[in-house]
Every structure is written in structure tokens, then in C-alpha cells.
Image 1: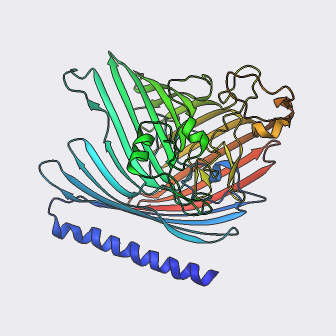
Image 2: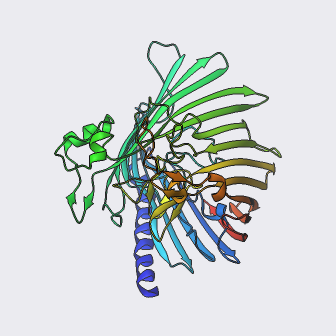
Image 3: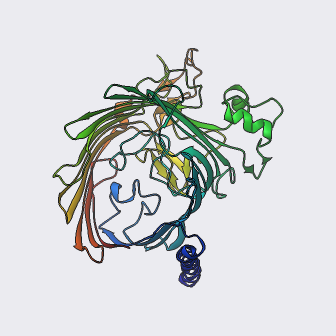
Length: 489
């Protein structure tokens, strides 16, 4: 196995070198082009059993969760290859990742993209980092819809570059819009399904206070099911996905999709406030998570993510930013007498691999995904998360995560007789018997501390160190350490 991996690595490095050559040579073609940015990072991770949670969570799918050790190299380059006086810019970038460890070796492009910007709008194509929602990155434990947990999905995306003034509102109202379509991996129960995503957020300026409200809509649809054939993927089906409608009868969709919604829907409402104070910004946000139902049906009002944080405008303090988050995914559309967890978050009857890509959930990483069976195995969770970051000196910075979660598995784990799939507003079957949730509770406490030390300002060379640990019944005791270097041009 080693020889094919090395051959593939050489090909990827050659392609990366060719891209660097193109980006460097672009200065000669476009007089108004920008500087070339290059970054190289090497990290070595080791653990006594398996790597602790924060060594693999929210790492863009780079780190294998079951590894004892990993050697990870990343080489990134990005450049503005064209910039005109009229405000049009053309950007290109890439990130080549090479991983070696006891779970196997790989070399692939994490990012490889082109993007064009003009008048506050951006069109991007390829594979690029993308996070949805209004969480306080990178301290957040993860957005409920799309976080930093999985490898970037190849897509085409049209968006506003930032919040943009709505005409004739005199700056009172701004909007931020995203619209994208992509494709997931072939190695799924339904092969190569499409991914449709869109969101709209509004920002209201009320004196110093900023109020943000928005909606985020994501659907896995289409694809090929080998035993049956292609799933509905015509133009009319696409519009049904876009407008969150049920499948048309006779389209080949499942019965549940003709009753509910075509495809596997994941979404939510975002509500947040920003308020400046003491040389920084106080932030509070709430994501009301919704799956497979119209967004206006508030069946699980407490499910989702809460966040409260403060971030200084300028770094250089013992604490530059602090964040507290709380996540609840227990109710899942259940009402009285119906088992909690019935909505099966990040799971789906047709798209059985669920809300995941290449073995990692696309949303919050506390929802557990089993890479062997390619299914979610734990989605009923209560969690608390605290994060700090600071730069006490110009050469030293740190980040600290503390996460505590109560994990209850799946609704189906608790069924002694009957089913979790009880229809809403109908009494459960008389013989339905579900074990109390407390019998399945497993706790986990996860700690993570990282620091970076600038070794040379002239060479932009930094030393990276990190320590992580897990404790509790859910994942057992784990400890891990990381050491690495980062160089920036």
C-alpha cells in the first residue's frame, strides 16, 4: 500500500508546485495582482490509546478519529491573480494535505478553488473552507448545520462577501446571502448525492446594538441507488428541493418524501445580538435546529445551540476572547408520550449515511459518527462548552477548550417493545415500551490546550504544542500530545 500512496503524493506535490508556479507567474500577466501567501505546517500527534476528542473534532476531516498517532503535513497557497481598478478580483488557492499514521496514509487537496469578487458579491468554485451559521469561530464547539468538522465539499457558491446595506434603509438594515450546490462522495448507500445549501441573514442596527436573524437550509438529494437506480434529480425536483416541498407522486421518491420533504433536510433559525463594550464586542446567539420539517413548525424549541461570548477588537491580552456554548438535541420533535429523539438528527431513512461527508459529520462533532457502519450512533446530547484564547505576549498565544457532555445514544437504543417512529399528534401503540433515558447516560469531559511560540519573526517560524485529554464513561480515558512547526511566507 505504501508505494501507491507515495506515487499519489508525488503527483499531488507536482500539481501543487505547478499551481505555485502559475500563481507566481501571474504577476507577469496581471500587473494589478496581489501578493502570494504561502503557509506550511507539520504536526505530529500521539496517544496512548486513541486520540482525544479535540485532536480530531473540527479539523476539517484531516485527523482520523481512531488513530493512535498521526503525522500531518499541510501546504497552502493563495493569491489574488487579477485585480482591476473597477473592483473586480480573481483569487486562486489550494491546500495540499498529507497524512501518515497507523490508520493509513493519504494525500489529497483539502482546498483547490477559484473565486471572483465584484461589487460585494463572490462566486466560488472548487473545494474550499465553508462554515454556516453565526457561531463564534474558531472557539465554537461547532455549528449545528455546517461546522469545521468535515473535509470541504466540492461546490459552486454565490454569496455576498459580508453584510451588505439594503437600499433605501440608510444603513439600518443589512443582509448576507449564500447559495450553493455541491456533490458528496460516491462511497455511500446512495452514491454521489447532491448537496443544496442556502441561507439569508438580516442585520438590524439599533443604535450600538446589532440584531441578527436568519434561516439556513441544507438538503442532501438525488444520487444513485444501485439496487433501484437514480433518485429524483430533474429540474422540477430541484425546484422542489429549493422551495422545501415534498416529492411529486410517481417521481420514484420514497413514500415519506412525498409526504414530508424531498431529500434529507437539515436547517435552522439563527438569532443573535452584537453589542460593543470595553474595547470589544459582546456576542450572543441561538440556533434553533430543524430537520425534515418546515422551518415555521417549532416542535423542538429547546433543541439547538446557545452561545455567549466576548471578543476584544485588538489581540494582545491574556484573554482576547471567551465563549460559553450550550447544546441540546434531546427532544427531536417529540411531544407528550412520544419517545424523545424520534427525529433521528443527522440520520435519514433513504440517505442512510446521514448528514456526513467522508466519515465525519458535517455539523456539530459531538453527534457521533461510526466510520465502519457509516451511521450516526449518538445524537441525543446535552453539552456545555467553554473556550478561551489569548496572546499575552507578541511571541506567545494559547487556546483552551473545556467541553462536558451527557450522551444518551439513539432513541432506538431505548425501545424495549414497539418503535420510536410514532406519528406526531397520534397516540403511541399500546404495546410501546421505552426504557428511561437516564439508564443510557454516558458522560464525557474533554480538555484541550494548545499554544504557539513565535521562534523567528524574520522567518515567520512558529512552534506548535498541544495537549488533550478525555475522561468519562462515553469514550473512556484518553490522553494525547501534539508538537509541530508552522512557517508563513
